[in-house]
Image (cartoon, rainbow, N blue to C red):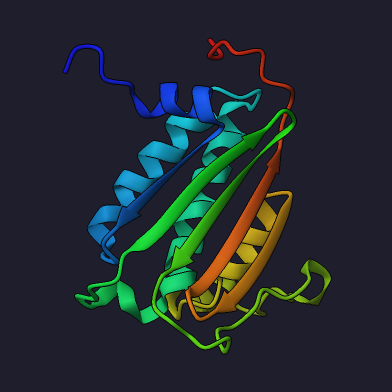
Length: 163
């Protein structure tokens, strides 16, 4: 489609974008690609971009938990918003939890498991990994689902993609 705005152009104009994807593992690649593309526009080096992509992917898995292996009709929402000095990615499980979804503990309350290899196999390494990779992580839960908010600080954006 000639003349149709791209996701990047939309973010440049509005400061944000939201996508809804099915809670299935195959769709995480789309989320990773979008986060990678949008992060490249900011003053982040390649390693920091990869850290952010991994953190968002892990947050998606943590938010939806076992739903990733089901055919839940409710989508996972991923929202990217920007400010002059940072980016916030919000991952929301749109399934109602009535406020009882787990919250993200403070980073100083999270302990690395004694056997990280075993923890990774058992799915218990996602949260410590996300906390280690980004600048700030918070969560919320309510009747509209549970969310993880990831903040990455970065230099001011001058309106031009980084090269």
